[in-house]
Image (cartoon, rainbow, N blue to C red):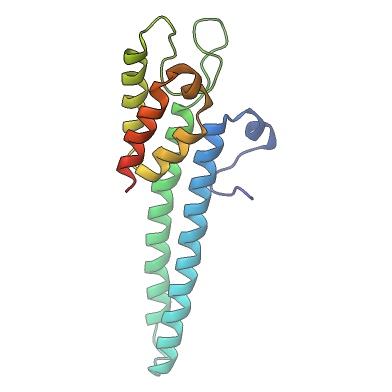
Length: 163
């Protein structure tokens, strides 16, 4: 998959965690879908434009500018959310003070499993899109080890929001 939603080097891609890569892939898919929809809407409007014998008017150019502006607005929102989520999921410093894995929540094995569950659940519930939340959670290998048997419980909770 080609990533053109944000500028990212091969070195950056190699440093991304599974969660960060999933965020990038989802955002790129959204962008590609929006671009496809934009092209289809322009094509449809052009056909309507020609069939209504409006060849001399600037209606088509105005409509294209309107569609482009809406596309760019929506794309800016996706990019902003992506950059925020990637930063949120950046690795902890590898100085022994945190978990070396790339997760957006505190990994503290001295906490009880119930406390760990609450921390991880709060983190995932902060992700607004239920489908994106579920995809990221499925890819989170740290949560599987960190939560133990509570992982299945949280999986069921998060899955209930996608229905």
